[in-house]
Image (tube, rainbow, N blue to C red; front, top):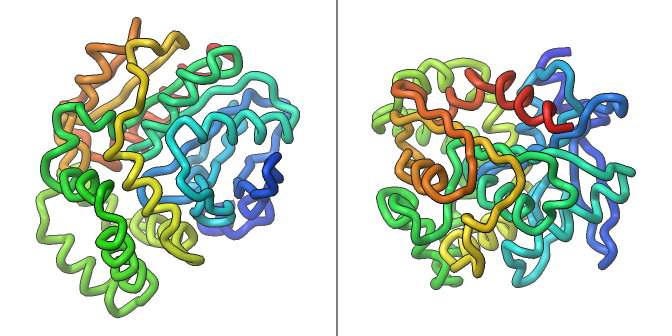
Length: 293
């Protein structure tokens, strides 16, 4: 089964009930005999990202954050709310201990799970992650606009509404692709954006925002808000991967984690970009995580 067949399969359109009546959307490789790794998607993104990764030896489970894809929105949600959802979700699946892999915008959520669920998270992987708002790089370039929107709810809704209209329209996406091709990007990412990966990412984005932009709006507010705890308090085994050629999330954020999370094992590469770092190291990432399960 190829990636396109996988994202259309029944196992990519599952939902789990949460205690407050909301539902959480997820995709599941389904082999319950393998160690479970929860994949936390980027911004914007959906559970389908996990379907892009062909992983041997692990049960990879992608989770839609509230307001994305199949997951119900949660009003005024905070970063600390997500670990509670993850714990309830794991209970629903009958999973006691698991690992978490947070990519890009999923990085803060993986860190939060590691902090708030130390008895259940066996290990955490942060891959080209966004960081706390005080991390160097969070107030620069594209991320500056994203975090500034945290305090501007009307502008946030309007901007994301326009973005959604573009993503959902084929003609506008062709124009957007031509514009993106002119923007600075790591060489390692350029080839990926000309491959099936670009089509897969578009499928994930459309799934993420198909029913609205509540997930994006909440994420933006959270990314620009203080966490209320320090990453130096994380006590579970933590790994990090970041490419110095990343033009989306600067590696200064990765270095911020590397300097503060106790005993973190960090891998930095010179040539990897925002997308290539995930695909080039996916097997190593998963092997590191499941070694703790």
